[in-house]
Length: 364
Ligand SMILES: [Fe+2]
Image (cartoon, rainbow, N blue to C red; front, side):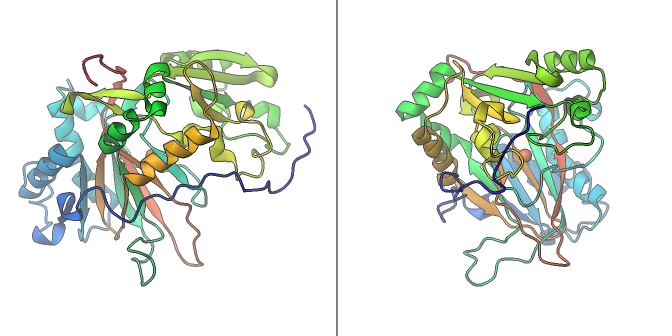
């Protein structure tokens, strides 16, 4: 393997960091917040046909976002029950044959380092099988915003209105280009064995971990099951490509919506010491237009600004539950530095998984 010289910290001048929001929310807080203090929150309220469940379902249908706060819940299993009022209802609405078996039985961790910011994204947009919604459960939270925090807690998650973003994007030359060309998600998955005992330069995920197997043929076939094109590079590097529209047809609103962001662009690694020295196409993740051409610096900035313009924070109290429609809202967060003794952890519940259909010509 080649020995790579790299600076410990590259110059950060060109790094695009999201602003997250303009300071003005795209939707009034009252439109998506439910105060659980208005409900008894006893066993009778934590059922799928309770007044609380119906209130959450009605709100989700209307705006695609529910933030249940002041729950007094401390157990992740109870928070998950509340999230599932919306997720299960949505699955019935979509006509799922056996919805309870189709939801993941566990609560997952977010699975990304706290100190790295997570660009706005739609969950699982980079593979053919995506999810219709995502729930967050506030297990460990940071203090509420204080004076000078502009109403944003350090541990806030941000959501961005993808309907507003879609309409604005399509009014631009860049948006029309994205509509015409679509995008390609490129992934370079390294081989765990190739790095045994050595520093993990350029590593994000080994294919063994991503596809849960040590067998390269099984890994490749699991990648193809997700509609990824597969090629093997040097040192058993598994290179996958997924070509798809930047938009996705959303049945509930009978229209195409932006379903793609720069979260999977190689620029995400601009500040990662062991990866930042690599050109974009050699980084673990990268995105291009669907004709494999690169986005220009101006196009990158436009895309980041777009989601920022329609963004707003969700501040967490311990026990909060949020359910987010994965079509109508993108989500992300700034990097978080913890002070000694602090913890910030959200549990994740995925909604119904579905095979992406792409855009409909009558959905623009
Ligand atoms: Fe996410």
